[in-house]
Amino acid sequence: ITISLILPSPSMTATINYRPLQLTDTAALFELIERNREHLRTWFPITLSAIVDEPTCLRYIQKKQAQAQNKEGFCFGIDHPSAGLIGCIIVKTIDWRIPKGELAYYLDHDWKRQGIMSQGIAWICDHLFTEHRFEKIFLQIGPDNPGSLGVARKNGFVQEGLMRQDFRDYLGQLRDIAYLGLTREDWQAAIKN
Image (cartoon, rainbow, N blue to C red; front, side, top):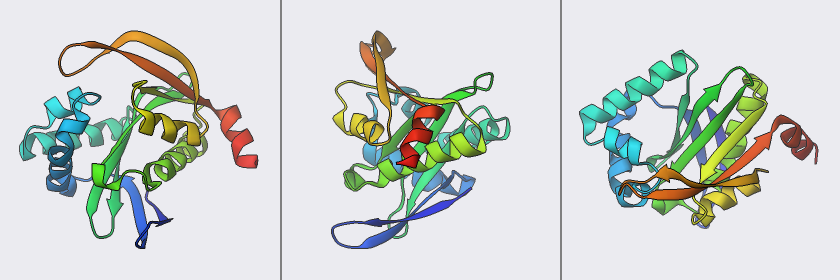
């Protein structure tokens, strides 16, 4: 599964690819994590504790590939033609009885505010609703993360609640989480417009 989108940017038009992570992405993923470690540490403490060097990064990708094989989760890299791997979109907490799942995503700080993640989330929602017949997709986002909340809202996600002290960050502190959802029905209505 790979998709290419042509995205306008201030200086050029680039083809961005969204595709499953591969073992050959080990060095690039580790570099991405290292460049953004400070930014990611609040909301991705488990990922950061799992990826501390290239060998642990390889094991992380192997684990994500095994999860994909078992349909327990999916991890997509975001590729820029000149910059390489600039982010990831993760599908996790899948409940096939409904079916529904949670999205998590991050983008290199140098590539934010260019529509790349908004387009990626639009693509993954379309993929999950059409190919996997999901009934709902949800996000858990820090209420103090306006960029991520904006990406969610641009894609039709609606805040369904605030879960107080529901996430433990890298310092061990409990943080509030905004819970946002997108149902198949809402998604179908949005794509008709």
